[in-house]
Image (cartoon, rainbow, N blue to C red; front, side):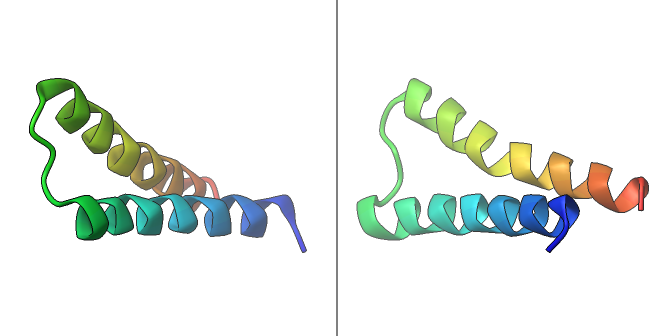
Length: 55
């Protein structure tokens, strides 16, 4: 298993955890939680796009 496949798997897992957070806890009420949740979802997408671009 290559490092690229491990990175893709971990990024997908991180996005699933973000979706699971919203499913389990509902929408956040504070601005800090919103910003954290947005970064938690956007960072793996940026990583996946970077991996795709360099493949």
